[in-house]
Image (cartoon, rainbow, N blue to C red; front, side):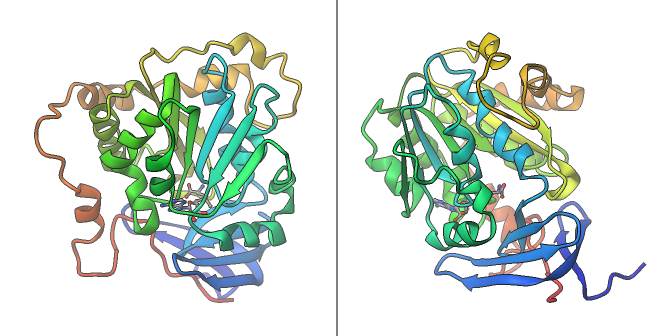
Length: 321
Ligand code: SAM
């Protein structure tokens, strides 16, 4: 069945797949200095934000991603008082983090103020906590902020970034992970969106390699469904500084004083369960020889056909409504 003009389609070359939503028109478009931001009205997923043609957040299923990017890591830390969110311009992760009364300060650093402007206009429910006195919203490059952060000044770093391409590429680099390791206090955790476990294994391998290279210990990946992303199955990868990852406060999850729609105690445990294919891959990544020079293979992978980043990334052609 050929899709007509009303359908918004993201094509994932790498996965040889596409994802389409029936649209009702575009309600926002902005070419910022960093990326192109578009928001569409859809039939069944509410509003849909796309950045550089890639699906980022929809009103309908964002709770899956935002809850899993925040609660498992926060409940895996003994006392997550000081949190930094790198990226996260749609503010959904910030909203979830601020549900935790034990969190004393959250600094969100997104490179692009236009993403937050679009979110305030079209996803106000995600921006409800932006005025919380514990929150600071900054608009600069995440790697610069992390390099300037004081040593041992953070407990949890959440990297809610775009894909490892364009402005988001540096957030998967050894330099960035090194800066994060330095900024974290002992027992500190980094958690980063790590793409699809089915078609982005090269990116996950790269992340494990660079997190290990930056002296993070006990690197684990958690799994969750995300319908609007390629393959509908997504991950977040956690690295621990000077400690083994343990669900320290799992018993507090059941007593949490705030609402969640996906995350709970069972989901916390289940999310860390490793599918067999992934368990085997992870074992090879954790025992890989780190001595061989780090090839910028993400760069190589995405840009081997000329200047324009094509196959492998989530670049797409969006049908203009
Ligand atoms: N959930 C989405 C995903 O998995 O693709 C990510 C959502 S969030 C909107 C991604 C944010 O990362 C964007 O707002 C973008 O501006 C931000 N970003 C990209 N590169 C960045 C950088 N170097 N420093 C800070 N923020 C960055």
